[in-house]
Length: 244
Image (cartoon, rainbow, N blue to C red; front, side, top):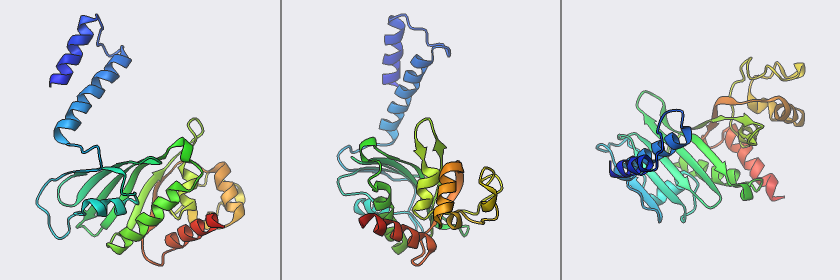
């Protein structure tokens, strides 16, 4: 790989030791390898949209057009989107937007799972945080996916005081739900130990306050894309409340 060979030669000419202990140089070396792999096997159109096909499409395939991909992830037309198809029924989608960056996994399983999407990451840029970006994106996305036969949105939601990650609280406020486990409720006050679902907990002021203070990272949150689902109602009510 040319770029890697040049990188190694340059480092060696400067007397750099590429041992595992030299972590910063190793990190740069790995990044160079990944960069070349990406450009070779995943061609990019840095203007708008790029797609890498894979496999013969069937009726069950994930096969949106460029504009449809924008709607499927709630993105404006000026977003930079990359779609990496993994066979007929799966696709990784990455988006770079002036307000946020995100990565999704679209799947259409033939084993009864049906059409669903996992939000693998969603990062609102610092200057746009607190302005309802995620709610607007999710509202546009949910309507399109529901109309196109998708059943669920899924994600894992983290909490980290070090970097300000608060998905554990923000995503449930937008309609994501799960059945709470004993581990999820471990730090909650006694009065909330009998609550069954996260949506039940978040339905009251006291419950939201308790979860914001004592809640933690939660796995396998789901957003029900059915037209009249509780998830859809919570999201619609939240968006409407921000307009008041």
